[in-house]
Image 1 (cartoon, rainbow, N blue to C red):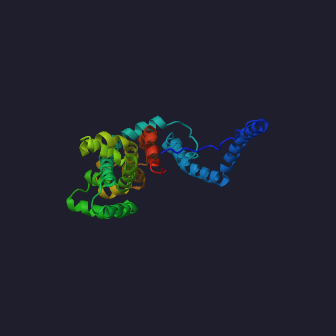
Image 2 (cartoon, rainbow, N blue to C red):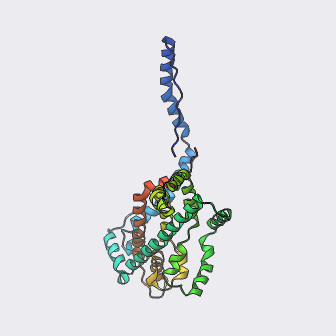
Image 3 (cartoon, one colour):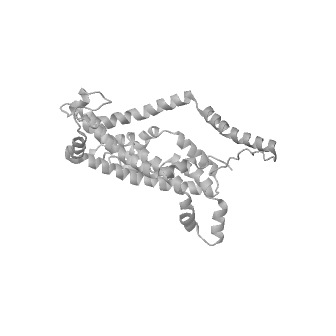
Length: 317
């Protein structure tokens, strides 16, 4: 929601004295604005921002630079500068064809887990958040307490109980062992709950019901477009969480054919330490670059939606 800031009134007294006062007020206004901008500058905050920026950018720069090096240049050249040759395209080709193109299989597995896991988690969060925000039912306070408590529990703490449960059901070492746990997103449910409470006026729902629209039609035709920024925000959060998920596939999957990219690249990185294993660090680095490209593209295309979704509810009228 946008808020407006009223500017200070300018004196409008007639006569020489009034005109002088008005000109003085007009002259003073830019200087006050410049002083306000100067007061906003904080050297400490600027230094902290620069440190955080370097902390975030340097690993990405290192990754991009070293993806252009061959295996030998990785050890013979400085990490933050280019090597003797430019081997980026050779590295990309070798990454896509190494071990019968297993990287493309891992890429397809990751897409499968993201589409079904993150997409399903977003759909459940939208339905659950809308229902909790706009409908009254007994035990709603208890549901709120459970959702808040679930947000505070880290996923790694639930990994072992989840593995034991899926092992009893015979679902370990199958894609369902990764997809089904990814369908639950307490943070996404809480975010959609708060977003739906702010974005959908209750009077709008009552008007739709008085016009004879059913609950399903009201949700899909009226509420869903209003929830679009929140849906995109939750979808991005769940997509990134599923794309980067490492620990859950590590304990659930044994067959490399079902590995996601995170687990597959770690297997390539670890094979250098095995007896007779081939060191392919250049392929690991190039594969990491290829792995983050879809996330960067998704954030760039959807940034105007998720930015508005994050700001929803931050200002009260």
